[in-house]
Amino acid sequence: MRDIVRMVVVLSLICGVSGGLLAGVRIGTKERIEYQELAYVKGPAIRDVLQGCSNNPIQDRFKIKHGDTEISFFPGKFDGKLNVVAFETTGKGFGGEIGIMMAVSLVDDKVVAIDITTHKETPGVGSRAKDDPAFKGSFKGLSVDDPFKIKSEGGKIDAVSGATISSKGIAAGVAEGAKLYKELKPYILKKIKART
Amino acid sequence: MSIVKEFTKGLWKEIPPFRLVLGLCPTLAVTKSMENGIGMGLATTFVLVFSNILVSVLRNIIPSKVRIACYIVVIATFVVIVELLMQAYTYPLYQRLGIFIPLIVVNCIVLGRAEAFAGKNTVFASAADGLGIGIGFTISLSVLGAVRELLGNGTILNINVMGPSYKPFAFVVSAPGAFVCLGLLLCLMNIVGDLKK
Amino acid sequence: MTDYLLMVISAIFVNNILLARYLGNCPFLGVSKKMDTAVGMGMAVIFVLTMAGVVTWFVEMYFLRQSGLVYLRTIVFILVIASLVQFVEIFLKKSIPALYAGLGIFLPLITTNCAVLGVAIINVQKDFNFMQALIFSVASATGFSMALVLFAGLRERMALSRVPGPLEGTAIGLITAGLMSLAFLGFLGMA
Image (cartoon, rainbow over all chains, first blue to last red; front, side, top):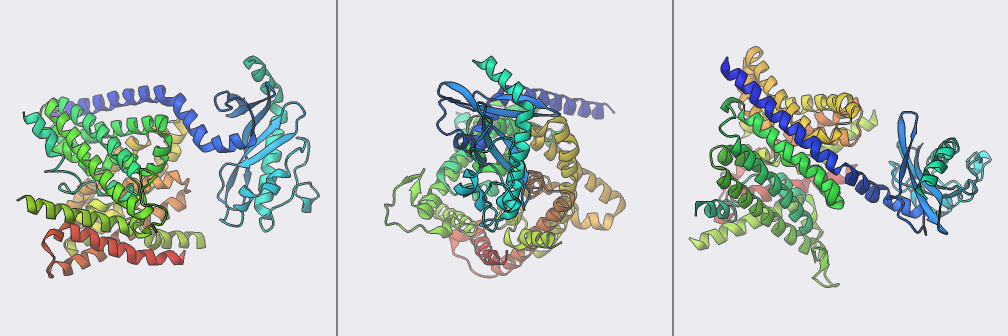
C-alpha cells in the first residue's frame, strides 16, 4: 500500500514540476515564436504585397477581435505614413483552403496587391494561380466595393486559364477579405492612430 | 579521472549510432546536409545532458516499478523545451528537421542512457556521460551529413567545394542512399577498429 | 473513395514508413534476424499503431486544440502511447492469453518505436479527418510490417552466406535495407 502511494506521489510530483517548467518556457518564448512563424511562413507574402514600405510590417503588427477570432493586421509605411494594411483571408479552392495575403490602401480603400500564402491546389494546374502575375495583378486598384468576380462571370478579374475553380476561390476569398476590411476599418484607423 | 572516462567513451568506444546501434531514425533522416546533422546532434545532446542530470538527481526517489514512466516524462519535458527554443531562435532549422525534433523523445539513445547509466550513477558522472554520448552522436551525424552533402550536392555547409563541373550523385541524398552510406561508414569504422587491435 | 485507396497505396508502397520516411528503424534492424519474431513484432505494431493513431487523434482534436495546449503535444502523445501499450498488455494478459503469449514480449518495445509517435504526429500535422487518420494509421502499420517481414526473410538467407569481416552484422543489414529501399523507390512511378 505504501508503495502505491509513493508511486502516485512521485509520478504526480514529476508531472507537476514538468508542467510548471514547460508553462514557464512557453510564456518566455511565446512572443518570439509568434514573430518567427510570421517572419518565415507569412513573411515573404507580406513583403510582396507591401513592396517598398519603409517599416517592418511584422514588428508593427496589431490584432483586432472579430467575433471569436483575432485577426492580425500588418501596416505598411509609404511616404512616411502607415497608410496601407495587409491581412490574411482564405478562399476555397479545388484541393482545400487557399490562404491569401491582401493589402488595402487606407487612403482610397483600393486593393494594392494580393499574394498566395498557402494552398493545396493541384501542382501545375491550380498552383499556377500562385505564380501568375497577370492574375494577381488584375486585383490591383479594385475598390473594396467591387464584387470581385472573374471575367466569365461578368467581373474584372482575369482567371488563370485551366484553373477556374482556384481563380474563383481566390476571388471569393478576396471579396471576403474586403468585407472584413470594411467592417473593421474604424478599428484599424484607431489602432494606427495610437501608433503614431 | 573517471568523469573524463565517462565523457570520452562516447566519442569512440561507445559512439552512437555506430558502436551503440541506437537512434538510427534521425541518423538516416536528417543527414542530407551537414548543417541538419549538427543541428539534430546538438538538440539531442541538450536533451541527453539535462535528462541524465535530472534522472540522476531523482534516482533515489523514483520507485523502480514506475521508473520508465518517470524517465519518459523527464525526457519529454526537455524535448518540448528544445522544440520551443528552436522555434523561437532557429526557425528555419526547426522547419527542416520537422517531425524528427519531437521524435527525440523516442530516440532509444536517450532512454537507454537514463536506464543504463543515469539511474545508477552520480550527477556529475551522468552529466559527463550524457555530454560524451551526445557529442559522439553529433560527430557521427555531422560526418554522415558531410559525406552525403559532399557527394550528393557537391557542397559542405552550403559552400561549394567540388567546383562547377561536379555532377551531383543524387543517389546519396535519397532514402536508399542513406542506408547504404551509413552501412559503408560502419564498415569503415570496423576496419579502422580492427587495425587498432 | 479513390482518395482513400491512393492513400493506402502511397502509405504502404510509395512512402513506406520504414524505407522512405525513416521511421521505426530500431526494431527494423533489431528484431529482423528471425522470421517468427519479425511476424510477431509486425502484428503487435499493427495493433498498437492503429489504436494509438486513433486515440491521439481524438486527444489532439478534442483536448489539445480546444484548450490551446498544442505545444504540449509531444509529451501528451508519448504518455498516451505509453499508457495505451501498458493497458493493451494488461488486457491481453487477462483476456486473450494466447495472443499475449505471441505478442507479449514485443509490446514494451513499441512505446519507443518512433513509427508509432511519428504516425500520430503526421496524422494531426496534416489535419487529417477521422477516416483519413484511421486509414493512414492502418496502412502505415501494414507497410511497416510488410517491410519488416520481407527484410527478415532476406536476413535469414544472409545468415547462411559468408559476409566479409568488417561488413558483418549491422553494416550489411543497413546496405541490404538500402537495396530494398531502392526497390521500393520503383513504386514512385505509380502515384
